[in-house]
Image (cartoon, rainbow, N blue to C red; front, side, top):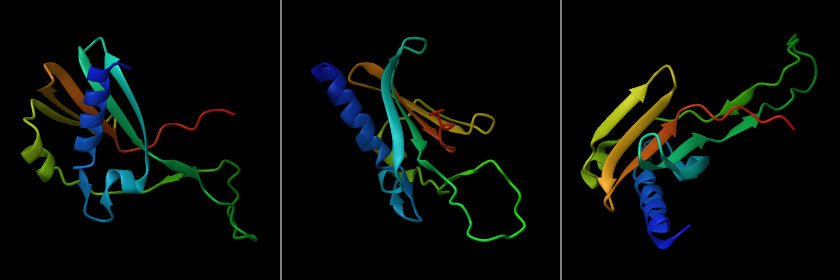
Length: 127
């Protein structure tokens, strides 16, 4: 990663931390996984973020629960975008209920940049 890309990634991570959750603080405190890349289809630098999921713990003893598949738990959060709107000149702010994602974009460093904040964690990878 060159110096320009490192600066863009750092800026996107900084802006992400301004997306507050009134329940606990900011996103990084909840834990998240992210990918940084250049999206050639939109000509933008992207920081894509997912909440961390974890396998549901086995319950001790019998409780009549006959499920064999383990569910994935993740922390639910509220989002406050008011500070974000003060910090960056937003060009688009889109929420897709179908994809469970916020897409937030603006121009900076002479390029399009975008945060893609997922509400649900990534699907668990097969081991």
